[in-house]
Length: 584
Figure: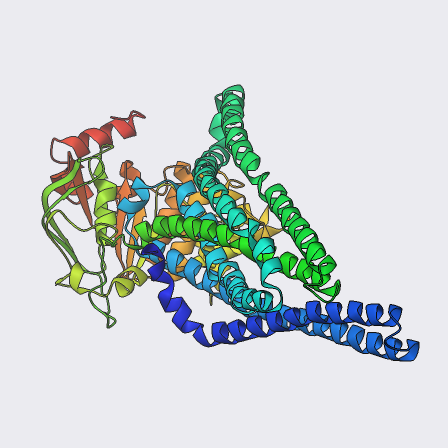
């Protein structure tokens, strides 16, 4: 139960509603207890009439009175049962809602390293399936637990008061039922845990397959993927069948032991009636109703144990992620305005997951409003610089300052709000083109959206679609070409109008003519804005105020285009080769 203590704050939050629900549950069960005794009285009326102890009108009036009481008690019990579910079950839905939001909010706080170490399918399973298991504990488990406790406290003493011998024999099979259900529930718990783990694996496989469907088709891997699906499906079938076989024992066992209890009631009660130890056959009918009322609560004891076990296992999985501390912390609560001067002082950075040192003791300064291009071979650390500026990672050593203030002493939200980033692998959401462009500025007008789309040289492409800006994109923007996705991402960054632009090789998928148009527009749009352009093309870098050339995580060259082409080195060689149509 230690893991479930995490839910205490939610029980306190909804404590009043839960208390009302518990009171309503007790009232509903009390009204339910009224019915068996009046069934007994109704049978006694018939017995008395047959024995000529009362007249027909008297019998008719008494039967009508008792029937009305039984019907009224049933209606009231049903009404309060409805209210019970509307309170307790609703509370469980509120807790489910709050817990999902808590998990999702925490997911957003966690650093990129966390997402590199954990699979998307597992993240999704914990926020859906695991939270669903916890909900059963916060709602149905409480509701049925209170019902069971109320019936045990009220009904069992009442049965022993009315007919102790019949009560003893009728209750004899119920502990056996509870123990058997408990044992079955333990097996169900183990096998359902395996099913949950399988669902995480299946979710991950499906997510990766659907995301990479274009690669699968390009390599004609459909037969191989189908074979993997068949293997996974067979594994799932076996686990689900193992679970179903155990579940199949649940209700048959319950019905068997109900039948045994009823046989005891009829046999023992019948003998007592014959011997004159009880005065009415109605007592037998009353106890049959009592036994049937108790059977489900007794069975529920084992089921509730299973729910608690499953909920604790799921909450443990949830807590594992909730206990993960974000590596990037926002230490400054007040907003910090950003102007755009960036300085790297002896910065070294090593990725934890690969132990690769991407940057090695680099230093440089970018003044506010400057446009700086970063050139270098693949793996030289270009993208890492942009990630460090946006504080997606913290440096291993050295210091990054923005406006002469270490980034750790800036408000994280202020920092990222002041940045417009365009990654190399442009990510678009499965939404309209318009909503993708206005993602960073929800209040944007139609004219603003059109203006930035034109600057990103994507407006004409969008107007060629049948629904224009209302065109729904597929997952990750699969509807668009690589160049179109990059240009929509550029439009999104321009619309935000930040103090700092970070363009990570975002023109790699466009032709040279379009690149020139976009660069011209970017130069105008980013006037007085600090701009960093990562590229492997000299054409993207030549008009920058300063060019930084990286190699193996170190600054190899630094200067303007004109200065660097006068010096023998990587940049001049790259320039000559690209002029002649070659790459190095």
